[in-house]
Image 1 (cartoon, rainbow, N blue to C red):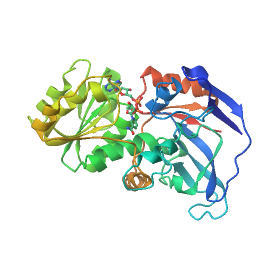
Image 2 (cartoon, protein in one colour):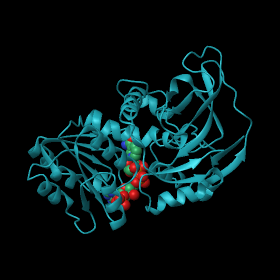
Image 3 (spheres, rainbow, N blue to C red):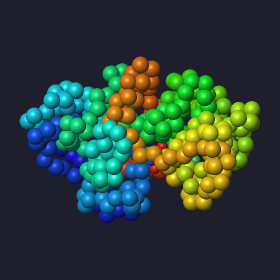
Image 4 (cartoon, rainbow, N blue to C red):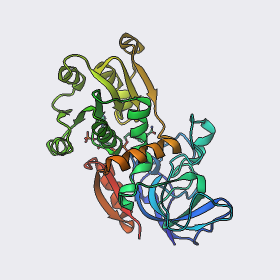
Length: 337
Ligand SMILES: NC(=O)c1ccc[n+]([C@@H]2O[C@H](COP(=O)([O-])OP(=O)(O)OC[C@H]3O[C@@H](n4cnc5c(N)ncnc54)[C@H](OP(=O)(O)O)[C@@H]3O)[C@@H](O)[C@H]2O)c1
């Protein structure tokens, strides 16, 4: 079988396509034939060598997100049988409850081997069943971006019908959060920076889109759109550089889920948080329980992920380049033969 490995990190030359023997399942393990993978912003950081939270093992297989079918089960496996349609969970050891630091080395695509391979072997515990109405390409978008959005908006943010959710930009996490908000009956306010992306957000059903280039003080516009009340929940992918505005956009006692760090470094003023009696938390994707709860909601709502573009396995480098260009709207997917 073929798989990608990461060589010397620094740029996309690190991506190496190699041949490897087919994996065999040990006790409690299953082999999954991967049918599609998707990219996350983190995968750009990993290949460039800028992802420092955990050291990558040499020649690691990249990417955390994929979907496929079970083709072999090892001795003692009870959760799966051949033909089951599955996706891996991001932190393989995090099945439920609170995240423990010691689980983090089991995160796929860094530091553990990821999914950009024709076949992978995983513990039977590290998989979920994918929603029945989704294709493999659609399901491959779920493990990181969608679970993160669900955890940030619905679990930690406790978004409720009638509340207002603010999302920033049109990347994978933000669009999933916006879709979950709409499906819940919340009002969604989104920011983005081009006329084309504004039109696409409106087509998704988001009536209130703020042009972040024309209105860099988008927090003021959020307060204006909510008659001074502010957003109940913000899913903040900008991190250090946008948190001050996210807090300013919040209602009294609102919540900010901090997911990313796209907007560079800045300091935050704890007094601003205190003045609002607001809460803020950092998000790490989500557990298997969270993934399964989200999948039930996706199935009931027949929600479909927003896929920007699908690349072939042999075009993996082009897929990374496309994500890095920032031109995408939603998820960038790789089809695995
Ligand atoms: N904590 C976790 O568990 C977790 C999980 C997933 C992702 N993340 C992090 O969350 C962030 C988003 O990830 P992703 O995979 O959704 O990214 P992505 O698909 O690459 O999307 C990035 C999008 O964000 C917008 N953006 C770019 N710079 C921005 C800025 N300075 N402020 C606000 N928005 C900006 C752009 O959309 P527009 O062109 O529309 O503005 C861009 O297309 C990354 O930092 C990633 O590492 C964290």
